[in-house]
Amino acid sequence: MMAAGALSAAIVSCGKVDDNRIPPTRVNIQFRNVGEWDIYGNPAACSAKIFDKEKGIPAAAFFTATTFTGFGGVMLVADPTGEFRAYDRACPVEARRDAVVVFDADNPQGAARCTVCKSTFDIYNYGAAVSGRAADLHYGLRRLRVSVVNQPTCHAVITD
Image (cartoon, rainbow, N blue to C red; front, side):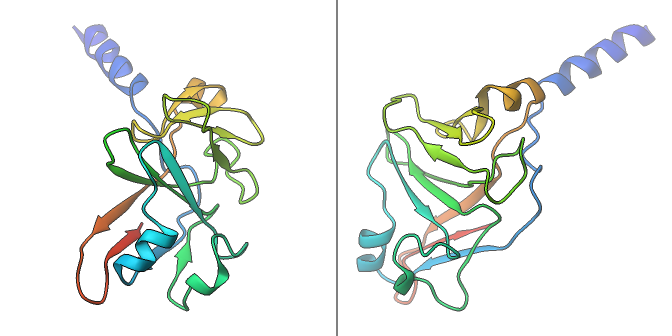
């Protein structure tokens, strides 16, 4: 009886995705109005936008004193249905600011690939690892919240 319980626990733990591998770093990106959202945010279906305050991506003028773009920058994506998802770009295998994932526009399945270890992640399926060391280790991308609030002083926000 004890062996069956241990086996069941092992099976459940194998399916768990660790999306908490990179150091917690603040994320706060606010789009103050529809115009800002249309210019800097709002990726079209099956595309991505990148935010990295240190590198001035997109335009440095967009960032304010209260803008924070995480450990490795932020990737905002829209899946084929137009639903928004956001992730910290730092690869969970490498856990370094300079080892980031990039959107693979040629892959219709919604893949992002690490520039260092080459692991791939399904960014339409909550950042789950698809291949490489990340898949072997069950590491996923750190997910962020995207809220389109459509208020007079804030149209949308990405937070940790």
